[in-house]
Image (tube, rainbow, N blue to C red):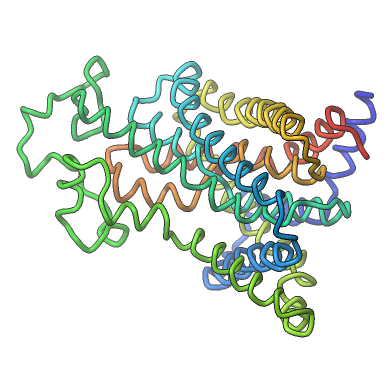
Length: 384
């Protein structure tokens, strides 16, 4: 059985999607003078997010309005609760592996309590390649499960500030700690890149007193990724209700061209992931171990949680749905939460969370993790 699993993983490593990822990964290593056009990368991201939403909305339009909707609502609640627990768990888990500051642990917890759209679309491409079905509501779950990490990070940062976090992100007992009372009001918040900050320069000082306000609510619920996903779902749903004649012209872009667009996206992500790995030099081996062990642990736990949930409710779901749920729990955000962190948690390191989320966990998931998780699904659930 183990030999079969290893053979299947080996075959999946030569999936065209991963070959494009490896190609991008080699660009910085070989010092090739190539820069992926930023405008093209942004365009690919927009098309992929809208495409995921479009396909999900189109399939949702075919669902009957019956008791299945109650199951879907409960599934959404399960995903939200699961990622809330993931974020809380990671805050304590990371500190077992490394001596990162508590504020950095809070930021990392937020990244892992959210989701990775890139890992999700890679898993979709993997399942499409194998012709494995998935539930149509999974794009909606992707958007729902992106929110808990933002809330966890904000809550943890608020608590740390309450217990004496200084302007450089150090807590009492951490090296070089400076009590906030000894720092002038002008020095309370470290300087940040103005281009990355909100236009309201007083925002960070207000944030010291408030857990959340309108700026943060907007960033949590209306960040570009979430907006594009929900927009795609709604457009796909309304179009699907009007029939095939309405959806067929758009299907060519969002469905038939999905794989080649994803290949180009993964090529750029490979380049970015390789460059992020350089940030791990000062993090230590424990931090590297965390970035690789954590997704496996979260994937395994989420599989058994979902398996128990399905048995409890008496519903049946597709093998691909199991895999996508595992990926949503085992991945880490590198878009929504970093943007939120720049706004609301400027004391945390901007590089360590991304090095873990993108350089380690994303790279591991799209190369070894996804095929390994799918083999685990087949072992636990069966292949029928």
